[in-house]
Length: 453
Image (cartoon, rainbow, N blue to C red; front, side, top):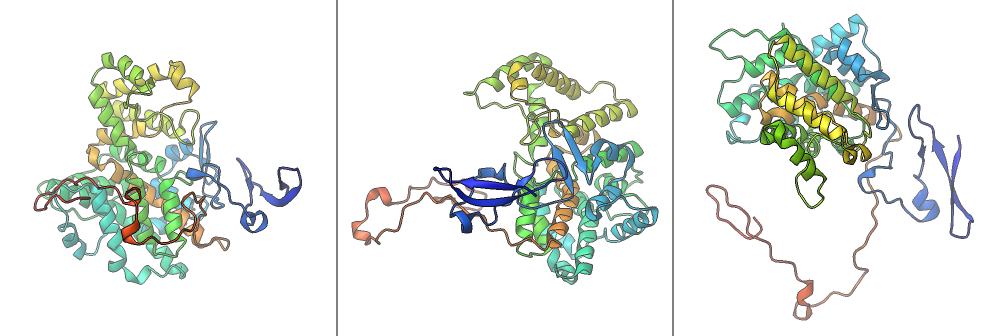
């Protein structure tokens, strides 16, 4: 193990820190003793150069466009595995044997029903509530309905909670959709596989029989696998942070849903489809490219560029291939939005502005098109993302709980406020020290508009 040496401006050694070796990718300098040893902290907004943990789950090589789940490439897993099999891999580290997969599938399947009182819980939401708001509320409330599995120090209870969340997220998500469109809730079926069961709960109605399409189930399986995990992203880091306080897993996943809801995280696939629909035709693409390059124009091309990937997102490659197969197998011909997306990609990747800045299509560029082809409405896109990412969140939560080095998250800060100063009596305070007047917030039906909302 090598050391990293910190010197003062005169070249004298201040402290030495061990360098921790990664299996693949960048090594890390262990700076846990930096404050005590050298009296300084690191400053890294967004944590783009900070390793908050060690993890054996997912590896991302952004420069070369590589995504590995426990060492297996994402394209191989999409080609050969089911989502439940990938969930087992992420949680336990190895692909399951036939007996292990059968047992895990059974346990997940027989936890898919929800406590019946949760049906009443849904009716407390407005009909036009965003599905992510419904998911957030319902998942956060699960600990009240399943208090027998919230002791995070009990390995058996942790496993039961994991199985419950993986099993119930399709049911919770489908019920959120049914509630917004005014259709009755559909109960899960134990004779269907994970993806087919979700489609059944989303699209069947009591008035007529429904058999989930194998083609659509295959596409849904690929979509869920691709979105299952992506290393220490914002929502996963949120789950780990909340979990570090030893909050129960239902609360941790609810926190992950909150983070994923952000438009520049999980909401980006909605924005891509909305953008393509607004652009309308290929004739408008050159102007869109021009506007995207204008720093004074607020217009942005959604679905291009990524915080980590500086080459073509491997998930986007998989999603594009799956979408092409889906169109062919459904005999849908040329989808105008897909043709528009491909032409936009071509124009962008032939433009020096995008090439030099390494702004390649990311997973959101094609995942929304797949969901649209399956029949999922745009306002449900992020909810589907939450359904798939729950497996990744729980894998990281499990890993964190089992890590003896993990402590409660407590970042430091670079304080730039005033130093200690004497208290001023109200009669002697300056106008500059008073808070700004807040604008009136928008009023909802039945409310008065008040200052500050």
